[in-house]
Length: 149
Image (cartoon, rainbow, N blue to C red; front, side):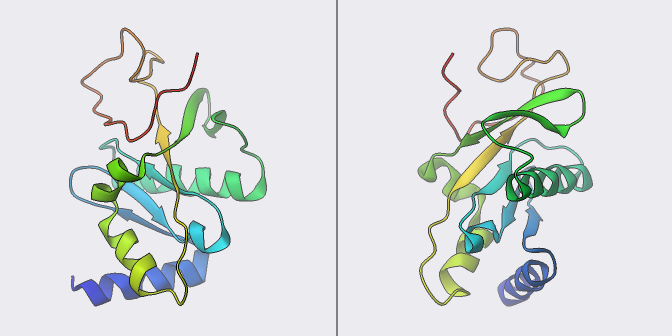
């Protein structure tokens, strides 16, 4: 798909739903468009099924938008599991969000401050990547700092 077609698709999605959700090879999925309304976009770095990742991103974005999700740890994205929404490092995030960065740079009239939150999922034992005993087979590169304990 050409770069312009990707930009056009993102714009159509944002016009219809307020955001576009992009899954790229390597397993990361992220939103584009929330920054247009002054909110954080969300990135998920776990290689799950693209449809599932899109649903998780959309649910998290909508929860932040309507106020049902606040704070960093929430059980409102996946029923029965807590997930974390943690601020990303701009430097680490940049390599994962190329189409989103391109959209914000070329398709908006004024500069937009773009911030990402990483949606961090637990492994099947409820452990997070920063906890001892985390199952490293559940690949999830961190683009954020672990929460303070």
